Amino acid sequence: MNEVGAVGEKILAEGIFGIVTTKRIIYRRDRGWMGDGYRTDIPLARLSSVSLLIKRQVRGAVLLAVLAIGTTVAYRVGAQEAAWLGAVAINCGIYAVLMFWGFPVVSINTSNVDRVTIASAWPWHHREAEQFVEAIRQVIVNR
Image (cartoon, rainbow, N blue to C red; front, side, top):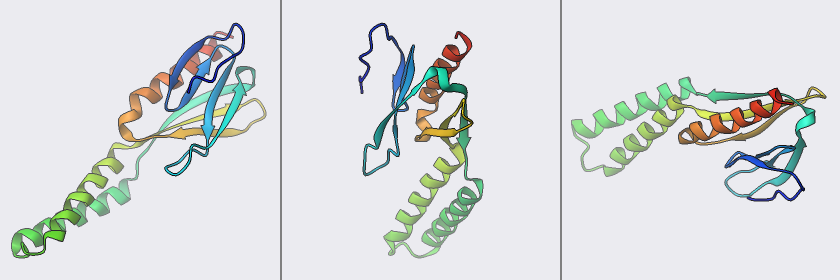
């Protein structure tokens, strides 16, 4: 994702959320499972703030955890021949843990009062999201 080419531009942070340089932020807007999205550049002069949110879905996680426990109990009580119950229990448990853990979401505010969500990622990308946000904050503070 090394798409930086301006003279005197230095990369400060680079990762799944995008690239932070001394002059701009480069990221992929509308990136998803099926597509790469399209490249978007925002000059740092237009930034007013950046935030990192952890999106947790507690109700859904509790519902999946209860479903996982219920299917585990049903499997243990006497439905061992229904192997699909074990698979349902394991999958529900995994998704419940992910939903409790939370998904990092990086958002920025621009000078014309637009709130732009740069990216959302899996829970294990939390540290990378923190580094990306910290690089943007350092640039904003040092202008």
